[in-house]
Image (cartoon, rainbow, N blue to C red; front, side, top):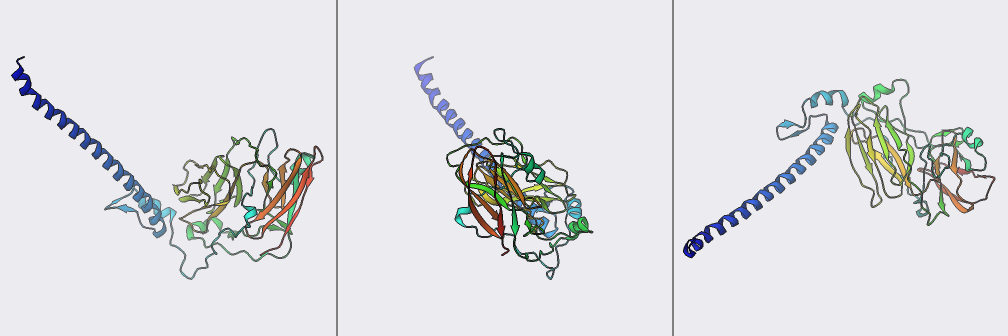
Length: 342
């Protein structure tokens, strides 16, 4: 091709290339904008779902419902909120716990760390494994304050016709105190332990979380089930950096929701934004030497290697106590605690 022909083509080819670059950049920018708008729309829908559950109105974005058939779901899962004059249980917030109690550890059931038995605290389990556990009971000295009825809405109240539920601030059997977290708080520094494969399970039944107090190993799966014919939201509200807050809708008969928390935290709260009286507390720990007292105030903790340790007991309302123990090569350890109501 003649030189003059090549020079005449150079300018158009350069312009074509520049045009393709501009078009490609425009397409990329448009895709980014659409992706951001889609994320914003999904966030608005989630907020609309929670807001609608509280007001018993179908959530909308613009003029369209979030999903078809919402009115049917709302009609069978939401009832009018209690009247303004209805008694409302006080906020179920953790009490102030002394700084020494921040590394507390409640129990997860059927743990199996390096061949150790689980932390079931039934009296039969305690006597069946002498010399391998730290065991004891926790007592309450004095009369606890009366529990208050939960302000159930009509749908949830229908699930408790015979026995309306109350708060669970002090669960006692005679002088025995349940829901006390007992754990080794000092003496295990620098040691690491395997995360158990078995998950910790929490159930929503009768618009109540069960169990009310439980625990998990850091990194262990926590599965939350909805056994009710009603819709709930599962909203963990951790306060320790690294444990992520989330709020997930869980309709009836849907798969369990899974949560994992990588940092130790005492009394990490779970709540339901649809039913504001629903709370439970999960504590996460970096070792397996913890337990939660049962309905008889009993606990059993797998025995650590021989050495000196500090065992701590913490109750959400009654406070915390510590005792020093020495674990020997054989014989087991028995230790009891006694609290007074506050």
